[in-house]
Length: 236
Figure 1 (cartoon, rainbow, N blue to C red):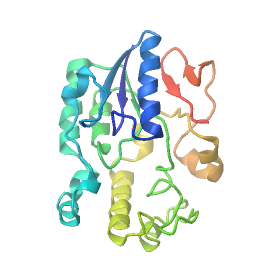
Figure 2: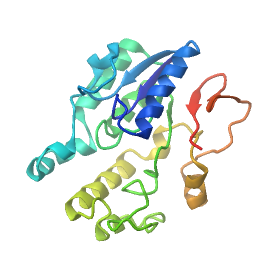
Figure 3: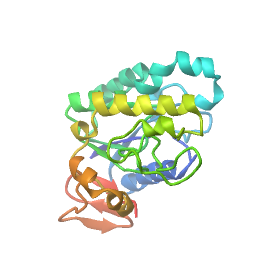
Figure 4: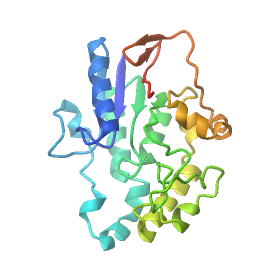
């Protein structure tokens, strides 16, 4: 099977990136062909697939004026759209496994995958389907679940992103754009593996997102779920 692994970073910057890279290595160990899609960086692990990677996009290295000028690229990356389309045409993956994609690769990668009838699964490394800022913390680093039931403007009111009004506004707009234009339930397959904590925080919303916790007829190998079609990483 040819599996497309997708993540914002192709080096070990954080926990999600470690999972992304380790998952690829383990998939290859069990005889699968793994294709990668990410962004370019001097710190990247070498791969022959970096010819498809988008140019590095680090919002922390540009000033506020450039952030505002390039605002749309954080919602929808035209570069990501065309490059993943070229990857799909040339490599023809059987399935796509997404890790982190918002803000860098952006939801622009979802339509080409769906258009080419490539099943999409996602590992939820954070709370991005319920919280605009992903982490259920407000600008004062206090636990906050005000957005769970749809009151997403609380992200702006509480300056959840770095206690900054501009960053929080961009985060809010990006979340609404994703939710309205690229609704989660329309692109990801209905079986997800996610943390029990995420389900416990609001099971009603999980049902709305068509997330299924139980994977039947599966074989567990070193924190992986393997069935006759897909391989997914489990977050415990």
